[in-house]
Amino acid sequence: MRKKKEKEVSVMDDVIGNFAGRPARVIIVAITMIAIIFPLYWLVTSSFKVKADYLANPPVIFPHRFTLESFQQVLQMNGLLNQFINSFIVAAVSTAISLVFGSMAAYSVARGRFHKTVRGAFGLWFMVQKMYPAIATAIPIYLVMRNLHLIDTRTALIIMNTSFNLPLVIWLMMGFFEQVPLEMEESAKIDGATFLQKFFKVVFPVTKPGLVAAGILAFIGAWNEFLFAVILSINKSKTLPVVIAGFITDRGLEWGPMAATSVITLIPVLILVLLAQKQFVQGLAMGAVKG
Image (cartoon, rainbow, N blue to C red):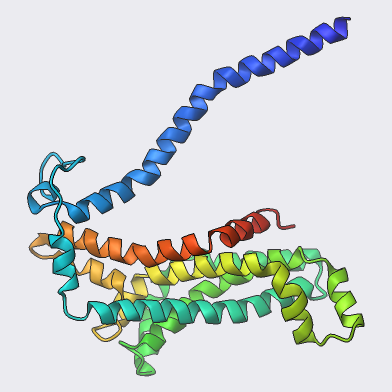
């Protein structure tokens, strides 16, 4: 009887604790959501504001007048379509190369006869490549690209985005490949499957969500890359992030056109994530439990 009462008291304490903690959790979640959504709201509304509103002080948070003047100004710019194509080609090609070579490298490490500590060291090494500041390599990379006559070419941007996306893809895919049961591959090998057949017909379908997640993250990284795009491009290979930065002039910031171009830049990424949302979430969930 005493144990039963103690159990009831314990349950009541948990209920009271959860009830007391709920307002705090709601407040934290609300603040976090506002911090995430408000910049996007501000960007979108600024792209439709009249000039007087986006230059107003104090800022106009809820505009009463909307206009398409900023979008009209941006769409009438010379070369915008070419810069959009540059961004898409650089992001798509670098992502494809990163996925092909990154998945192969990750599979080799995950299935190689390495000690667990060595395998972990490989993963740590690949992540370290993403941690050092890219600006530290800007001057030597510029000199190398200049000597190779690749300044102001898409090839230079593809090379750079591939080199920076590869470590991320390898690190993510290592975890996905490690979760594939080795028995599946051994069964396919017994059935006479070659290495490529085993990889594409057995391993690939299981890790497809992981490839989608890694591909989307690599594409977004290449699509948004600014540093080397501004260093290695002059005119022909300009991408959309460089165009956005171009609205910062000696006369001030052109907030309306800058916001409109940012919205245009955001649309393809949103479409990509929405189309692959299910597999993207599955891939992130798989990566979250990698062993």
